[in-house]
Amino acid sequence: MIGRLNHVAIAVPDLAAASAQYAETLGATVGAPQDEPEHGVTVVFIELPNTKIELLHPLGEDSPIRGFLDKNPAGGIHHICYEVEDILAARDRLTARGARILGSGEPKIGAHGKPVLFLHPKDFNGTLIELEQV
Ligand code: CO
Image (cartoon, rainbow, N blue to C red):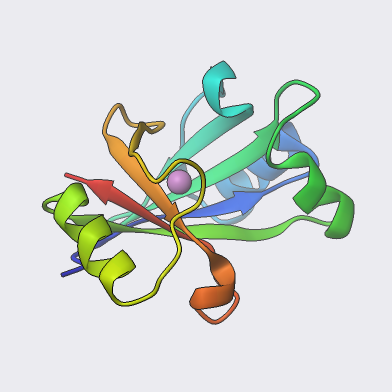
């Protein structure tokens, strides 16, 4: 059911420093910061030949990233995103097998303008998984 790895998202305490590190130390192609107020994050997209890295930084007081950074002040991998062809079919398959969908269970429009869902990390080895319909 799942397809390509769409991105790995890393929560960072200092977006400018992390962007500079990826650009200069790791030599990656790093985009400009983009505010995503509806998701409570500022995102920097890093294009790799086979996938993307997304640097996430809290935007606003009720950002979903803030609690993660409180627990992981140096930053850390926040989630990984797999591509699916049909997100509603994916949701139904997962819930039929006992996996929990975070939030309302209805897809939201994600940072790339496409429908996404998040799966409960306790059901997947402690990994927060995002599914994105492509
Ligand atoms: Co994501």
